[in-house]
Image (cartoon, rainbow, N blue to C red; front, side, top):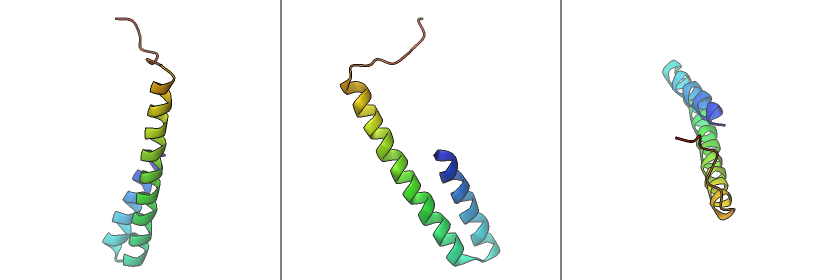
Length: 61
């Protein structure tokens, strides 16, 4: 999902560099929406993980 955010960000930068302001704005809004969805899903995942008492699959030291 972060790959999509980076891709849309780079497309927005490229479009603004080439003078396509409207397209750059659209790409940046899409990147912002996907980034917010990613953050929300990440926080939900962390809450569910710690609520289940999971400590992760860390290798032994």
